[in-house]
Image (cartoon, rainbow, N blue to C red):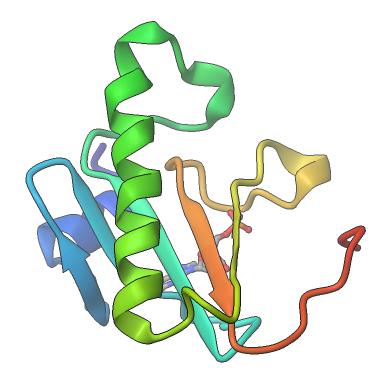
Length: 114
Ligand code: DGP
């Protein structure tokens, strides 16, 4: 989508610190990190939010989680622990409407979240 910042990041029009990429998934460091490790993992296909998912996207969503695990292992947080979260809509704090997983690690993460 032409006006989506995450599509522009995938296309390289906006610079990002890439940590992982395959045919379907792109991952990069969050500009506004909330933990020592804060990675955004996104599908290359533009999907606005969880509300737009159907069964045709099931494979893509699985790939986002597999990428999260790979990055957590590579960055050295698999044993200590990490959080993977996806915000949906305004009340959940979604600000960018291109589906994305947040991968957070490197400090104790409280529960319930704020
Ligand atoms: P959310 O609030 O769940 O929609 O998360 C959006 C995240 O995207 C937020 O943590 C900040 C991050 N972000 C927004 N714009 C950019 C950008 O241009 N570059 C990078 N690396 N991260 C961005």
